[in-house]
Image (tube, rainbow, N blue to C red; front, side, top):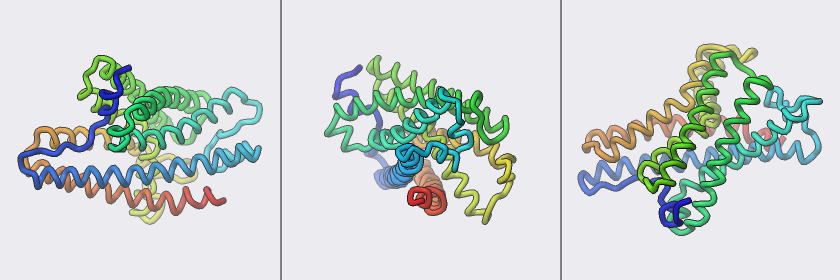
Length: 283
């Protein structure tokens, strides 16, 4: 693995440009706004996972996993139940570890922690993707084949991004590593983006629209199964290009788009927290 100094700069902070400082500051501010909203939302999701699934497991009530997750606990399926438990544990670790990995102060002042957390995050992302594929295709899940294909592509991208992030940092190409690490973070967050996006969609439409809530199928969910990671990845690519080579107008436009998307994301986080996560944490 690389030295502590190089690992400490694995994930980039928004870059301040000398030219057109007002546009660069606007873009930087919108990125910090997105970061803050994302960290808060993912910490809520991690707490929900620990409270609901960890709490029921601690009380010996493994069938309680089925309150939200289909096929969460299946009597007699020891291997499948273990895989599900590992996947849930990794989900909580990744939500917490991903947020920690992006905190600039940790990168600068605690490089050893950043380096080891990065290793755990990378390994956890790979294991979560593989266990998720097993649960999806061999254990069973809600949704239709289109949704399953979208989720499977998400898992494949996680494996690819993890491999490329590791390859680049081992070669000392920190600039490329930073980009692949950010792509990995967004791909790993796909399951979180799905929930936040769905809650935002429900709030905008005043209830289910474009899908059947009983069968959990329909065009809206089919699109979301792919958009949950492709949209964030597309926004990231646009942001990186505007930050590194865009003129003032491009940076200002990107700042506005990112701010608007963060407002929509924050609305989804609020609806998910109030309507889904917090009630089950106290239930």
